[in-house]
Every structure is written in C-alpha cells, then in structure tokens.
Amino acid sequence: MWISRAGKERPVERGTAQVGRVTLEGDPAAACAAEEQRNLPVFGPGGYCWRPALDQEVLVLKTGDAGEESCVAGARCAGTVAPGEVYLFSGGGKAAIRLYNDGTVAITGRKVMVNGVLLSQGDGESGENGESGADSGGSTEE
Image 1 (cartoon, rainbow, N blue to C red):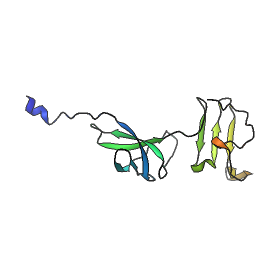
Image 2 (cartoon, one colour):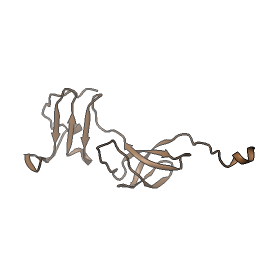
Image 3 (cartoon, rainbow, N blue to C red):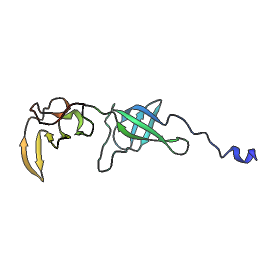
Image 4 (cartoon, one colour):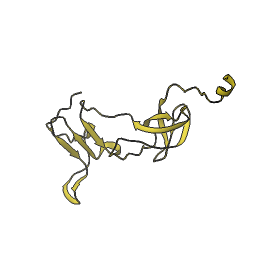
C-alpha cells in the first residue's frame, strides 16, 4: 500500500559536500557553508590529528541516511607539492616536514628535537612551502 510506504521513503539530498569557513575552531567545530552548523566532529587521515583554525576553508560532508548530520573532513590544500609528496605543517608554516619523492626529508622549525634532544635551533622562518631557502635536493615540480 502506498500509505504504509509514505512515511518510510525519504528523498536523499543531493550535494553531500560543501566548502565552508570555520566559525568555531577545535573539535567539535562549527563551519558556515550554506548556513552555520555547530558541533561538527572533525575527521582526518589515520595517524594524523588535526584541528581546524578559525576562518580556515574546510570541506563539510553531509552524513546520515538523508544528509541530516554533518562533519568536517579536511581543509583545502595549501602549497605546491608533486604528486606522491607529503607536506605536513603547523599554522603559518613555521614548523614543517616535507617528504620528497626522491627520499629527501626536509624539516623546518625554530627548534628540531628528537626524543627530547635538541638537534637544531633556528629562527623558524621558512620560505614558501616550508623550505628553508637551501636546496634540499628534492623535486618541487608539480
């Protein structure tokens, strides 16, 4: 009977992802895409902990059977890396680790410590994409 099915079938909303701006930082976060949504859980790749910053551009995914719940899944990639490379950086890029395809690992930061031992202390200033200005020997082409 069509009456018995009327309340059970809900149309699935199209457009399940939107780009928005963070209005409350942290986890849970709030973001404004078409409208502000609060208490959004934040997801990132496995083994990686990330909290969106205020006004950062993020991807908001609609979840649930009819898209009634949302979450923040990631931020727009900044910087230039070649396919297969990884660039991990903190806010402002003053601390960064870049993994090049040729096996080079470039570390930039005010202090570089391994197991609590200070290996290097610099000014923390870096060039675009976290490079220190010295040739790291890695590929930077896209």
